[in-house]
Structure formats: structure tokens, C-alpha cells
Image (tube, rainbow, N blue to C red; front, side, top):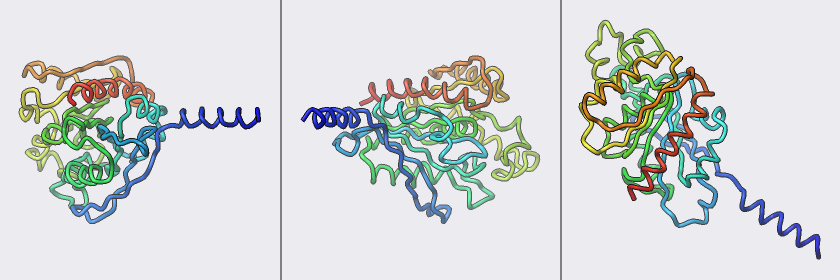
Length: 272
């Protein structure tokens, strides 16, 4: 009798400490004529809840994959449980930069994420299917992607974050296959000017988008982030910006996501 009692206590305790669930969702992209994998993390209790959850779309960096955040940033599941949200990690291609490439029809990731993926997630999961329940963030190439997509689609996302983001691509004309997406800078300067985040600030509408971004002081993207921060200040655009010692690596991003999750939690709670 005592054994059964203690076993019951054990299983009850185990049930109460179960972590968030990680699933892989494949979405057919009509724009690119291929299936794209995405990680979807749902919080503990999701399957028995009737709640509609806010969603954070979390983008990976160049030369990485959709599994990067769950395999390299320890603690993502704990953050999903802590803040009771859904996190979606799409595969953004090895070096897509989250553009709709004008020269490569297989790289149409703006359309994929802002239209095809959003539609699928809201249909399949219990989401708060409006901009008040949606945020987007990312690191490096994904930091550029998060701001790029959010600046251009303020009707879709209500908050956006960047960690060590490549928020100005122009100083790096020979890096990370950007020229394969937009053509060479020398021959396609206008495309580069139109598709760099720091030149999209004029799109921001008053009180339309909550912004948070940061960069390590030892990061090669540090200067472009400082410049974006100053440009936002010059244009009187509210935002949260921080910098601290750190390099372009997972030690920095594993710490940074904790601050950004707190920011997004505040946004979700105050915009219901």
C-alpha cells in the first residue's frame, strides 16, 4: 500500500515537471516548390489547454539550420514553459538572409515566413492569431531577418528582436552569400540599398512595432548595430538597445535570448 502511494506521488511529481514539447512541422512552400522543416515548441500543458498562445518566431543565423536554437542554446524549452508561449524555429536556408531573392527563385523566404508559415501555424496550433500575439527575433543573419520582416510587415508582427544582427549588409559585400541573393554590390547597388535593415527605418509607423536589439562589443556587427541605434534615436523611434562584452557566438546568444524573452513576455501581457 505504501509502495503504491509513493509511486503515485512520484508520477504526479513527474507529470508536473514535464518540459515543453518539441515537434518538427513540414510546410509546403508554393513560392519555392519545396517542403521546409520547422521546429515548433509548445509549453507544458498545451495539449490539455483551451488557451490561445502567443507565438515567437525565432530565426537562425547563416550557415545554420532550423534546429540551431534547440540544439545549441540550452534552456529554450525552459523559457517556453516559463513564459507559456509557442516558439517556432523555421529553416531559413543556409544563407537566405530571409529575402525574396530577385535572382534566385528558390530563395523566397520573406514570402514563406510572412505568408505561408504564419498561415499554417495559425491553422494548426492554438495561437493568438494577430500582431498582438506575434513576435519575431533572431541572431546574426536571423537578426537581420527578424527586423527586415517585421519592418516590412508591421500588420503581422507586433514586436521584433535582433541579437548580433547583420542590420546593415552593405559593409560585407563578399560575405555569407549575400551577393547570391541580391547580385554583386558593384552591379546591384540599388537592390542592396533597398534590402538593408538600416535603410528601412522610414517604414516604421508610430507605436506600431516594439523593438529590442543588442550586440556584443567584440562582435564584427557591433558598429552597424550602434549605427542603427543612433538612427532610431535620430528619428524618435522608441526601442530597447543594449551592448555588453561578448563575441559572435552561442555563449552570447544563449544569454541574450533570456533578456529578449522577458521583453516579449511584457509585450504579450500588455497587448492582450
